Image (cartoon, rainbow, N blue to C red; front, side, top):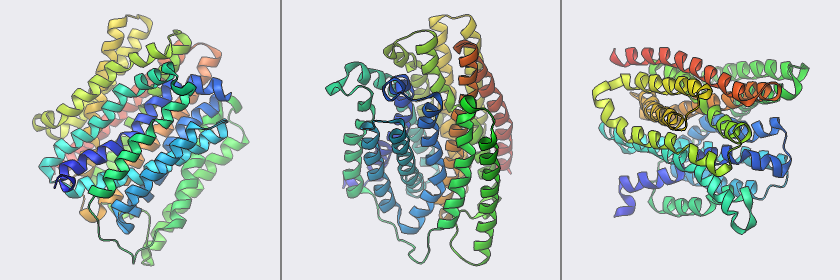
Length: 457
């Protein structure tokens, strides 16, 4: 029966998976329209993006544990329902506060849903099949990158039912409902561990700690480094330290824990999470690119949307080819991806001051190729040799590293961008962002050498 075929299950999971990155890319291009419509400040604009990724990251680990304990099918369906519902809330938002709340709920729902995808795929397919599966998983992000910003521009220009930017959120409803119906029918059930309980104390400590870290970074431009900023950052350190102490204490007492730090004995996972953080901090690029094109070059939203298409094409091509390329480069494919990705940003930095339309598109194509190669390989190599019992937790940890990196990039590097843009111009601000991203990718490249060394031992 086709509904029970594992490749059909993969299709359904990828349909649901695309909702999250699609929202990320669509929203980036619509930010100027949202800011004008809701009268949002620059810091609120950052929060619309960074709070989504922060919430998504915070609950990645919790989401993985929920699936391990209560069953991955059940938790996946709950997360999907939450994502569709919160998308509707964003679509009807009348103020920045409601929009930010909707985005946080979207992030939480996505975080509950996505770890189940990786965990189910990890258990359904063998190691040989996973090369193709992870390439297809990465491919969904390429589709989102290729179509997201252009689709957002198209929907805004069409102004369907006079909804303007709101339709970019409401479009999630039909896609989500289709995936929901298919998931109920097709996903395999998993034996639940009702004897275990969710570590709510750990979840709260981790959530507050990470939010206390991300929030002040978004307000530095408008408020500077004031007492509130210092208080939040110090509080973040305290909460995260308390989280580690609480988890170790609960483990000694034999209680259910959110994170079993024994998982960090797998060095490739530990290095993979750090690499993921640095690599995905580049997510700020997709925020500032749309703003730069519209505010500095005065491109229309449609022109800005079309501009990102070469990036998406490169992403798609390399996502699909990564499984073939990995046969020749083995584990070094991650290092190759980071080199290509960083090279693309350096080329774009040069083009910024020697602008040529064709070269600009070529730069974005190279960046897309690098991101496609890197995303497919960093997840696969991080999860290599991880036991099935740790599948949900490990998947959540990897995704947490990716999304916290993205939230950090949007909040911290985004603040640098707005600070320079407000005092100098958008061109210099964009150039500084490109330099900072390249530096982070260089550090990630050095870590990737460590992953290769560990997996060869």
